[in-house]
Image (cartoon, rainbow, N blue to C red; front, top):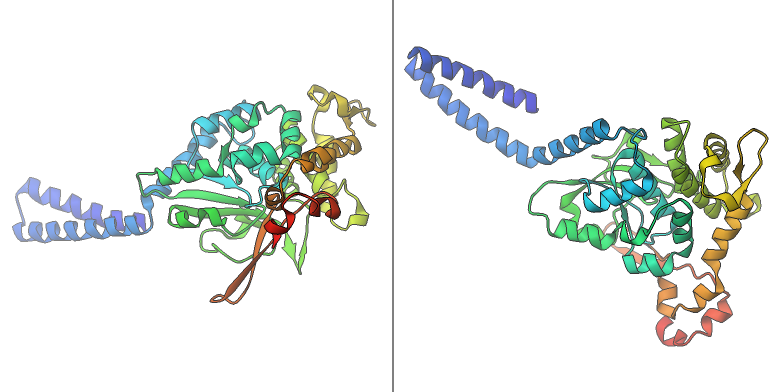
Length: 375
């Protein structure tokens, strides 16, 4: 459409210029001048309607990322990349679901690095610092220093959008969910969903801007095809490189183990794709330069590998720590990994939520203020 509208306009301008230069065809000059004014107005209206300027900026960002960084061939470490994005975010963001669990956080961080975009942590900085011990531990193991100071959180994205003085649309990739978070609904006119990587029921939203291979939702016949979104991110990563950075491998491996409960078949969550992802991460990563010395063990080959049982045990211990959970009041415990759901017709939707409380029920009910805060 751009080519057609500007092509017609160009033909009219060239003809008008020649007639002026030759000082001929005065009636045609007036007619062409009228056509040029009308066609230019039509082009401007169309450009505003489709946000052509915003799309060109997004394309420029993508080209700059491809040229200057190169997908997975950029010399930056993940740690330095996150610090750079905190200072100079792109117009292309990746965000997880409202609950902001390990899967959402790590999926956003890893896919952002792979695609040269800006990761957004979908919970507040306060929640991240005080309520995600297993994520903090995993980031530390992956060499991400002072993570809370070098990441962008949901309040940062809201501030970016609130302070925007232009009408340019920012692109959004959704990981571990496929419907925009409630906290971003008021900015719906400023963001365009262009990619989804998820393992939940497809709500069939944003199909005009996100379809085909950009809509990677591993859910069929009422069942998730993977235990974790990080399995899907690992598949994306390993299609692009056969020598992934240790930091990426550490993060993805840790969350797949957590979400699949250490690949335990008896739990009923693990799938062949999760097992393949773990196997491929372990065999394709050079762990010899890893800082995970406490988790290294000999392998059948010449290179060491990771003791996944030990890694899972330490991450699970951080997540279920009695000291951690005893410090929570009732409302904060109920807010941990809270997920909102809705059901009903388009015109009459009902909402409910499910919280994850990782402590014995009788101990939780004995917390001070339990009845007033739950009734």
